[in-house]
Structure formats: C-alpha cells, structure tokens
Image (tube, rainbow, N blue to C red):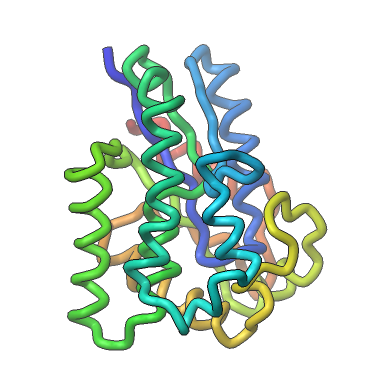
Length: 221
C-alpha cells in the first residue's frame, strides 16, 4: 500500500513551523504510523549544494534572477531526494512528512511576479514540471500556518534555531519577506491549502493549541 505525503508550510520564516512539524512527527509515531521525515532544502548534501550557493547570494539577489531558474535550483534537490530516499519509503507505505516542498517555491518564487495571470502560470508550471515531468508525488495534504505579519516578524527576529544558511538572501531583505508573506495567502487559496491561523488578539497561540488544530486536519486523511 502506498503511503501519504504531508507538507507543513508557513506564510514565512518565524511562524513556528519546525516546532509543529516535530510535534506532528511524534504524534504520528505514537499513533502507530510509519513516518519518514525530511526538511527542504537539503542542507549539507550533494543534492542541495546549488540551493546553498543561491541562498548565500553567490548567484545574485532573488529579484535579479528568473523565478523559473530559482525554482529549477530547488527542483534538482527535491527530485534527487525523492528518487534517492523518499520514493522508496512512500512505496513501502510510510507517511512522508515534509518541512517545505514544491509549495515553498510556489510561495517564494511567485512573489517575484506581479501580474496575477503570470503568477498563476508559474504556480501551474511548478505543478506540471515537478509532479508530471519529474515524477514527484503531489501532496495529500498541505498544512499552511499563518498569522498577522507583525506577530510573525517579531517571532522571526527572536529566532535562533535556523538550521540552514544564516542570514540568507531572503532574511537580509525585510521588504522581500513582507512581499513573500503577502503572496503566501494568494498561493494558499489558489492551491487550496489547509490554513491554520496561529495567532489570536495580536499574540501567537500556544504551541499546543496550534498542534491540536493540525491534528484535527491530519486525522481526517
């Protein structure tokens, strides 16, 4: 029996995505599920080396590059990781739990596209290229965490656990991060992600409250 593929996605960095991802992993394992996890980009790996070049700024700023080129850089990582690691586990019936996926490219890279029709064309292109042409599995469920931007920005400024490239090309640019945040809701609505509002009355909800909302969605799969 084939497995399931679940993606945890966020409006932008700093919303507590990784914390919720780890809690969901523990919950699924305790529920008796076979779970395999992966975080994209795949840092410190052969398949992820191009993404590290890009995030370091070696290829230029995001707005100086074609979003299609940037997506291709990330797609190499995803396609190689799928074929080298994830596909086998999926075929064995594991729940594949991902921290970011194709969905991140659709959020981040389409934020560089102003025209709405062109934006939709890019999002559709990623679906066709990665799922149909490269053979990656389409997610069974995308959990999208969002909150008021001021709450997210405050959390991001306090964050100390970034396990990737420190102060990458996105984190250096507050204006770009705001654009990505604004764009994320458009993508989430267009692709029908399951949205979870992580704040209430100007403050972030408790970790347990957010996790409970996630479990309600996952238990329906």
